[in-house]
Structures are given as C-alpha cells and as structure tokens.
Image (cartoon, rainbow, N blue to C red; front, side):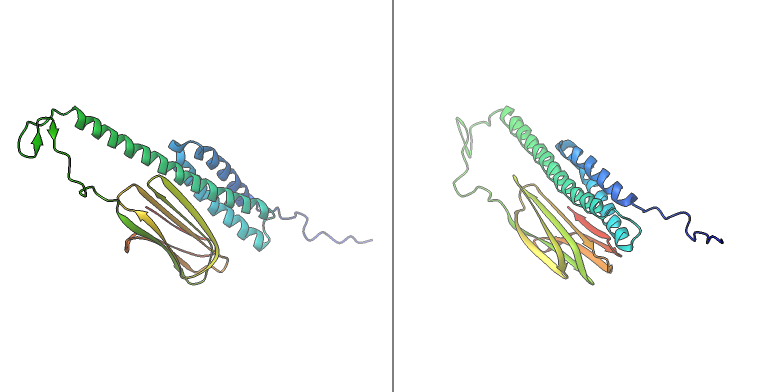
Length: 230
C-alpha cells in the first residue's frame, strides 16, 4: 500500500508574541503607576502596551495569532497604565509647584520689613486695595483628530489645578473634536492619543489651548497611533 506523504509535516506555530508582550508591559506599567514618582515609566510602558496590543489584534485578524483576548486585555491595561501614569506625573508636578510657592513665601517672610514711607505704615506694607487680586485665567483646551477614515479609539485627559479627568471614545468618525474648560494660570497637562483601525490611512492628533496649537502629531497605517502630550 502506498502512503501519501504529509504535505505539512511541521504545523505553523501561532505568532502570539505581540499579545504576550502587550500584557507583560501593561502589568509592569501598572506596578510603576502606583508610585507617582515613577509615573513617567508607567506612561511609556502603557503606550508601548497599547501599541503591541493593537498589533497583536491585527495578527489575530490575519489568522497568524490565536491570542486575541490577551491582546485586547494588554491594550486595555496599557491604556489604564498610561492614564494612571499621567495622573501620577500631574501629582508630582503639582507637589513641586506647591513646594516652590511655599519656599517663595518663606523667603518673603524672612525679608526685613520695609521702612515707613510712601505706601507703607509703621507696621509694614499697606494691604492691597480690594479688587486688585489676580483672577484665575479662564481658558479652553480643544482636542482634535483628523484623518481619512475612522479612529478605532481616542483617549484624552486633562490635568488642571487639583483635578484630573480622562475620557475615551471608540469608533469615532473623523474629523472629531471636543473642548474642555481649563484654568490657564494654574498647572495644566494635556494628552491625546488616537489609534487607526484596520483600514489604515492618515491620522492626525492636535491640542489647542485658547485657539493656539501647542502639540500635533501624525501617524499612518493600520493600527498605528498618533500621540500628543503637553
């Protein structure tokens, strides 16, 4: 009896590396995001996890990988690590800004009292007249995403004063934009990340503060991401 040789003696192994890498980077990023001082590390690892997770999903859709759920989990946890990392950096910057202000106030209080004269009293400087206090600056930050198709995901966050907000949008038709009120006199931080879908094309993210462009980035290709930070 003649035996027919197996045309495929060595079955192709699934290429699950991207999904595994995304999950590992996301988990490590979440560990670093717990400590505000290492928030920048969590931010970098989270961004990489999102990128590898989307690449892993792309491989599963092509049939060369089998860990679609792991890839999505890695991308999702990576986005969480990215957001928490930004929040940690906001806390560090706010604490630094407060420390600088406190040191300035201490230095001012240690200065010798001014001699009596015009605009002064024997007890010290005459208090400023009511109504001369500086009001917080009201402003608007605008997040924009332009492109040739549909953005698979858009994530934007705003750190302003003592607050922090983060939002996500899925399958957004382009062009897309949103405005958020901010206090431009206080510490502010902005981030915007947009990811392309499987159809690819050009994707541009843009951050404007009071109508002025402060950050812009462009990416091209399936599952590629454009990231703007200020």
